[in-house]
Amino acid sequence: MPNFLKKTNRHELIIVTLIYLIFFFIGILFYRDFGISVDEWDLRLLGFVNLKYITEIFFNDVTPRLDEILLIPKFSEYYANTHGAIFAAPMAFIEYFFNITDSQKYYLIRHYSNHLIFLISNYYFFLLVKERFNNWIYGVLGGLFLFLSPRIFAESFYNQKDILFLSLFIINLYYGILFLKSPSVKNSILFALTTALAIDIRIMGIIISPIIVFFLYLKKLRNKNIRIFSGVLIYLILFPLFTILFWPYLWESPFIHFAQVFKNLSSYTSVGYNYYLGDYYETSNLPWHYVFIWISITTPIFYLLLFIFGFTNQTLRLKRRIFKISDYHNLNDFFGGEIELQDLIYYALFFIPIFTVIFLDSTLYNGWRHLYFIYPCFLMISLKGLYLIEINYFRKKNWQLSILVGLFLMHISYMMIKDHPHQNVYFNFLAGKNVQTKFELDYWGLSNKQALEYILKNDNKNEIKIGSAGPISIENSKQILSFSEKNRITISENSKSDYIIDNYINWYGKYKKKRHEIPNNFKIYKEITVSGKRIISIYKRK
Image (cartoon, rainbow, N blue to C red; front, side):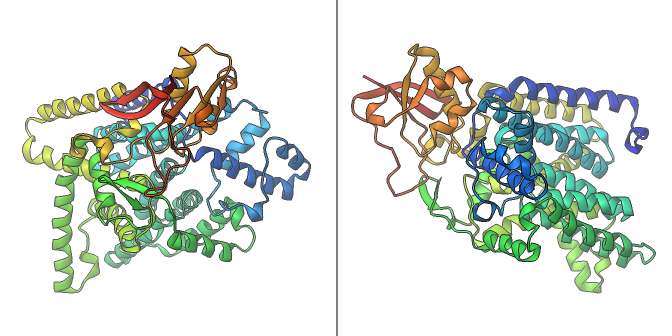
């Protein structure tokens, strides 16, 4: 029996199992409801590019059959090879091996697989929180907080970059904490393996490694009897090897190609625009407050309030520790114990990426999705805030706090159910009224699915011509529909269309949208709104 089960009481085992079974069945019930994001067609191609490269080396007879599935560019010429394919390549293999030819099926498999990895990481987050607070109930709350995060929940199905990275980041962080507590051979290998998996989605996954090793060094300063050399050595040898092993782009000239990835990360430029506070900004030239505002308006208020408590306490504690170091010049006074050490790690992993993005003026698309991976650390600080509120104000009446927490979580659940399947456009009240006049809403075109379904349901013609008033491809969006449904749709020029879809997204800022014009002989036929926010309109020929 695994060690963690030996230490688990019966009530915990029953409740935790029940909660994660509910999470699992919620995913099964709802995974078909989400549309295709604009990145997914490219991620599918990325998977096949890497799969073809692997078969050319090891199974050359398979390669011609892969070329029959879609037009696969040469590995050396494909622009996105600097993105890890640790998820995309296995998904391509599943599509090939099981001969899945229906686009709806292979996209749905990708959606649920991505969500399943998110659920696994949610359980690891439960373990992280339980470890930090030595309390399984707080672990359950951590799992609920993460699951009941509207945007994170929706994107856990179709965002196969940012949410997948968040998921692997959590798992890597869990094994990093185990390694910090005990740098044994087993923990070194697991930490190295999960570090490589995280890096092989986003190179930013390397951030956990130096922080954990640094704090392990501080522990060594405090206790000379701790043996860390062999564990650190094993880790530092294995994680680069695992990283290369799982990333075909690094197989040839790994050091040169890895350096190229870093260069691309630091110097990447874009001509795209983000709509922010009622104006267009280049994605590579955003205001310093961009990330802070987006986090503040898209995170449930309850979590934000708890974060303020936890953040204030941690900042004041850190300030006292820094002054203590300056007085006594002793680095081993930087933390008070194992729990405080973990708090410092979560604090650092939340703020270092934010300030790095601000300092480097990094390119960011569409809100703060590139920084979703810091969200678990945000929630950990929020849970610390809840703990501080409990011990300071509800020590003898924690049942009252339990009711308050339950009511807040019920409210968030209600909002998520009401807005389904458009939780991706969730905003709290801090965003103010008329949100669509200040911020981007459905920037990935997920609602195209619902717009197409509405047209198909209310128009019985065998061929329906549909145009677009924005940059998001309807051709890609319709691939999530059934075979019979998508065959009824013909993508057409706006002037020749029966219907035109507009989700009010403009990637080109002050420049004219592609296919933007809506002829005068079209009128509004249907508008889809979410909590009063219009996310997409359907125009019909008069």
